Length: 282
Ligand SMILES: NC(=O)c1ccc[n+]([C@@H]2O[C@H](COP(=O)([O-])OP(=O)(O)OC[C@H]3O[C@@H](n4cnc5c(N)ncnc54)[C@H](OP(=O)(O)O)[C@@H]3O)[C@@H](O)[C@H]2O)c1
Image (cartoon, rainbow, N blue to C red; front, side, top):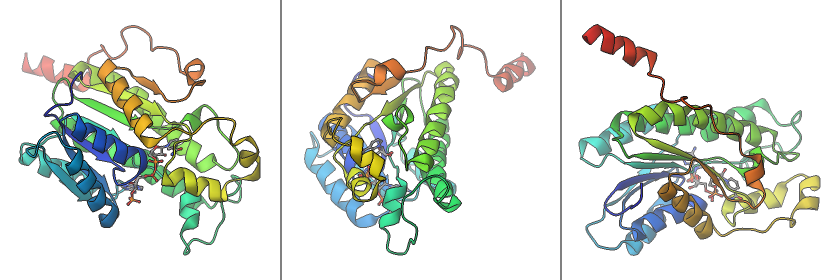
């Protein structure tokens, strides 16, 4: 995807941080932008910011309050957009949480900690949002994606640098990374590209929540890497999309960790279900 003008883009987690910066940048590039997050207030503020960034008033900006963990709601939103002729051709999964953010909620009694004192419920919540949330969005989008469409899943540099106190987060983001590798191969025959972005410390509310409550060992190494702005992260992600890159590293040292390319031919193999259907039709 070389140009974002007049495409429909759908961004989750777009009321804040990297997702919001992506939505604003896409509007500035001329895209129609559809944004999603749970809280309506921040979503409305983001929508106003997106509208201000548009190139022309004909660009749509629609806001969709939703929890990506709610599969039925996610599917309904994609089906409704498609029914209105606004099926997204760029889909970005930026919605994500860390355990430290959950701990800021006064109703949550645990404090971020090591793997054995972090309640299993926190692991389930992070899997539900960071992993299954993206799966729901990809599944809901898939029937509506045309050739040339693009999906971006936002993982984390933490999959290469797993730090103490992040067991639940790294588990959920590693699951997302593995899923996205497979998605890439399965979408290639459909003419849909897939990217996997790995942000490192980025100046957003998520990072601030982490800093307030993270494990002491992490604070000891904090400051060794620089902090990126959300706008810079969005710029690098969209540059990666334009280049058709699968891996979109956002940290200096990440390239040496990137998995080797898949064997030639992977992704070219016909889907067994479709091949059987084709034989039956012949
Ligand atoms: N900032 C960093 O240093 C950093 C580093 C590595 C990776 N990342 C990843 O980059 C992505 C963006 O992070 P960020 O720093 O921009 O975070 P952020 O500023 O906290 O924004 C997170 C966004 O996700 C939304 N969200 C959270 N849970 C959701 C749910 N269940 N359903 C729908 N929307 C949900 C939030 O809105 P609501 O709360 O209203 O739903 C918000 O819009 C995340 O996937 C994060 O894990 C960030």
